[in-house]
Image: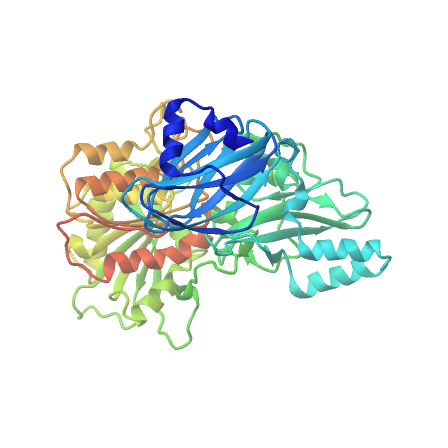
Length: 581
């Protein structure tokens, strides 16, 4: 027995047991909660019979106590010990090195204190279970399980009824995960993608990037028996928004850590298409804009708890602003581009100077981002002041890749050519505190750099998924990056400079990850930039959204950035961070 083995341990262990009390502890059972009152200077022992290789997890509610939890093997050897903070939902895990009765001693770090605690064995995973290959049924759709049962029962029309139901309700199927909780709250759901196969269907890939590139086999559909039902069920957080495509008869794809792999470029050439059974699609209002080609025709999933985006909806009672498009030639850049000027409803040159907003990727802002609608609604609700907005489109060719990433000539073009032209033609402010420059991806990086170079003109930065991973390329090719170079070149410029009179809004998606381990993802480098700015004393409004590098989230968080920067123009002399996870 474990008690006898422990009493034979060295005198130090024996002395400890004499202080904490007898070792014949309470038996623990999987899933059965235990409540105990811990007396001052005493320990509470528990016993648990395990098999060699078992992985054990306990959930412990320490209350006000700082608990010390120690696990001993049947031979009396210490397996693991941990000090748990007086916070809810503490975990204690250990691995059984052999079979028999294990002892768990629980004591308080403060031997003069007493109090109550609760513990429960939440998991015991055997060695055989841990070594077994992952089984897809762990993410098993209740609806498909019912369909499979109906087929096993000989219901010949079950499949046709299933497809009729899908056509009526649409897909993917979104179902609650029963009994799966995180800190007592149901957080995940099952999402099942479907494809109605033909005799020629060999496989179907759910092209949800970047994940399908990292683990392609996990995103390939399975066939339900000999039916025409192909499916893939994934566990997805209830707060997420994402876009995807389907690829029937996809070629073999190897797992890849590189997001710019040639496999991504070949997806369009291998029959990638929108999901014919999903009515939600990312549709653009300007099908001729070449900047939008990569975003055209994507299927969309918005999970039940995705944050609302109320400012995107056109409201009949809200007056609309006016948009005028002009061609603008730059002497500095030696090129020409379209700029679109938004003036709010009831705009007047006799009014006080209007606040000014400059946004890059003008075609994207006018189309997929639906920015004019957001501006109309925010102004009507008085969440932001009436403002003039300049949508700056990209010049032809590879101008976007050359101009937006920290290009001093482009920054000077905005400051010395575009801005004076806007002020000559529109009643706008000369105050940098009422001037915002913003963009997404490369545009977010550009906004921060432009304000860094010209803080006398641009006092506010609106950066959405800014590409702070950027470093200067090795050659004239704007995409010729040295991957061994430390990312976040712009952060180093802020570190080396004095604190500038800037206010910054930043956001990034939790799916914008770097899988290579270099730390050069959108999410990682935005967090780094935030921390650098806060350390320098800047006012920073920062949030993270549950999504990826796409407009589904950006067009909602744009309003958050505008409100953060424009609702109150008061300067702050202290660093400030607003973080939403």
